Image 1 (cartoon, rainbow, N blue to C red):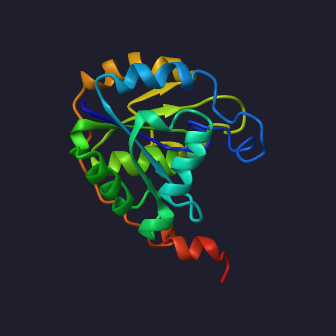
Image 2: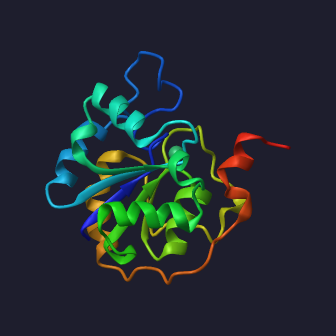
Length: 186
Ligand SMILES: [Mg+2]
């Protein structure tokens, strides 16, 4: 595996603390990112419809974790949201990686895990705390591996690397267009 793609909100930073002045970086992230960045390119794929990659880079710089990432892609710039394949294609292209060379790490089964699986990427579901109870409808969206602590990700990556990547399938869904998300119900 040459690259790892991370979701941002509630994967690297706590969405409830983001922008409050409190440290939003989730436990284990600061210690684990340097280990992963030693021999892999790391990227971020965020479903933010407001923040550009420059905004995200500045915010991550302020909390001291920007240096580990060589690519940041946000939905605000692509016009589509995860799980749409276009945003994954943009992120893979920025990381200069093929889907089979890049694992996705994220907290959201529908956006991060199903989207990346559809692309043919191996997936690690980061399931922590009680903010995201397991959705019983999530069947079929299961990740290659599930971790409950960020510090488990290096070992999880070594395990998923030994497995064959999933076959690519189409997950195109029109409702993932950013503009519909901005004006719900319109
Ligand atoms: Mg998230």
